[in-house]
Length: 106
Image (cartoon, one colour):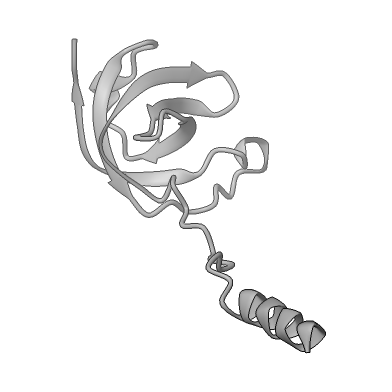
């Protein structure tokens, strides 16, 4: 009898497990007015080092980035959505983004 009760409790614990195997959302998929610094790479051109809301950072390769912002160390606020894989073999580790908003800050 005790074995049966323990077995039922064990099965119900496993069946009611609250931690689900959720696919983690891509935290680098979008950003709204995130702080970023411009970096000029000899191999990859202009990159942005973006500080995300959780305090982590990511380097991205912006498409159609206004040349007036191509200044090493320039601090900016940027917004973007939808990262895509970089097709350049030498710069494949930096995802390509289309900026929706970008402006310099002090």
